[in-house]
Image (cartoon, rainbow, N blue to C red; front, side):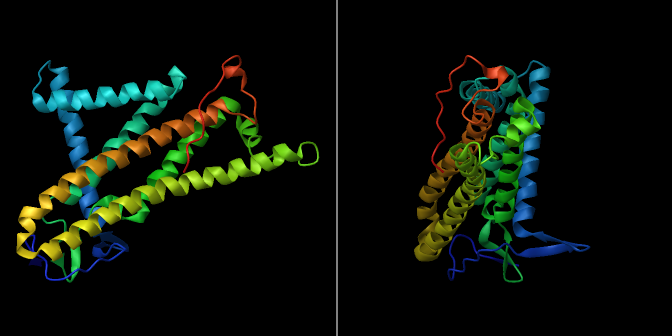
Length: 273
């Protein structure tokens, strides 16, 4: 294990994650190590806050967590017009937001990246720089979207959004095909947007550390602050897009509203991905 405190000898950026150890046939990668630690931080923070609130006690940390949670929870109702659906999807959306946020921010912790190596590999690496993680949460988000669409329109009704008889309605059939392609493009966009920004941020810190050499301790804090800002933006974008996609899925049904939404005009537009 070779520590490099800020100053790096060379730039060695590796795209895939590397296994650090094995639990039987299961490899434990450097991203999984830091990712597990990030999840523990999220759980500990919220269990601590919930315990303090139940006891009627508070401090600055509890107040900050409550303020962030309540603000994000309110945004769910601003984006999703259906109140019952908003209450149902809020736990998933908020969990994704705080998990992505904390795991992204973990990239600036001491020892992360090339600061500490193990057999020539990074010992710790932020979880969003692992394409497997970003793909997994994108799949979870889109499965949730389909769940709410089926719950609203029914299985056959939801399938009718994508599959239309081309002989009876050729234009509608083409629109359904485009909608099906759009679902996959949204999944890919959610996955690659987060991964690309996280990996680029980690690479930027490594390059700055190498170029600045022993002056890195004075230069890196500015780039780390920028990474904190970008991490919040990426977590928030992922969170908002998940809510918007779910809202659109229950509001749009082959150009018509489902019975549960009759009489209500939908003004939302599909965001560019």
